[in-house]
Image (cartoon, rainbow, N blue to C red; front, side, top):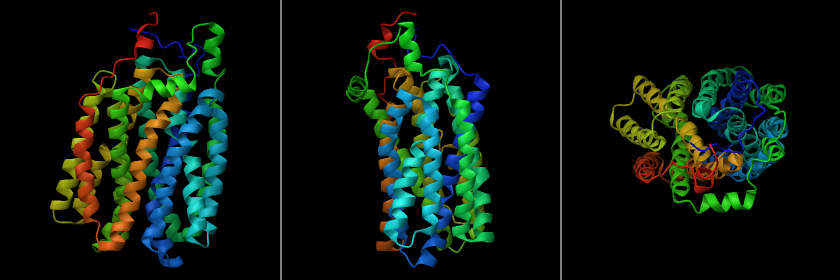
Length: 413
């Protein structure tokens, strides 16, 4: 077995990396997952269309993907600590801007561009870069599963809180409270402050390759399996963001009480804790492409049954539990596969490239949801698109080759 020469020899304590990384993702992803709860309050009070709100969140997802590549480069070069600090400040500012925005344009700049930048700097790509450098390969997929599970728990924990805040304080004051809460990422970032930049430390030991950013990108983008993995991740983004943002409105349109949507999104987060942990654990022993195929096919079945069954609070809860187990469970096997194929020297950047595809899918999922609803008065077409894309994602993962590239296979054991 080849040893990745960019793996850090000076490691932070495993428990510290997992605890701080998990709590950062809990906060960042937890706040983000609740944005769908603001759709009806914001559009009703401001007199905006659902499409206007959807465009802002679509921009957020696209900005997250675009910025994620460059934020990943910065994290790989300068370490995650500085990136996390900047991301936390941008997150707080974006939430405040979202609360005070008086026009759809201002809302899109804050909820879209600024929060997209903030999420790029406080979520998986940055944290997984630290995990890749600080945790041995034998525990890497498992550790990524633990961190992704924490993000899922954040959804379960934060969604009821966000619903209570909106009901008690109003949607604007609720955003202000979250802006203060998100700054807890700042002290947590100190726990991921690496003793030395992993790349520099390895260079001092004389064992790291001289591969630069340009060569790393060229190598990945010319690798067939990397492109297939990236294509499948596009579908993941489309499905989860469409459901997360538009399902509350879909349920209200069918005359279900508002708390059903809140409970449904919380259940997605709760069951995703189990799903992401299990997928990360399985990724240590099972081919990760097989895990991804199973996840995408499982989503297809879950969505189809949900649409065919009579709609009730209990059918929503069952669907939420099933889709929750499949929600972010794609994250650990996808990122662990990138690390296995190309090593961890540029993991944050290459993870950002794959995630960019995810966010293009997210952009289309949230935007098409609002666009087609405004045109047709229904979400049906988008549900059908989600099913078709799920079948496509399962198919493109079949031929993926997870073996390390020749550059790493040539490294000494």
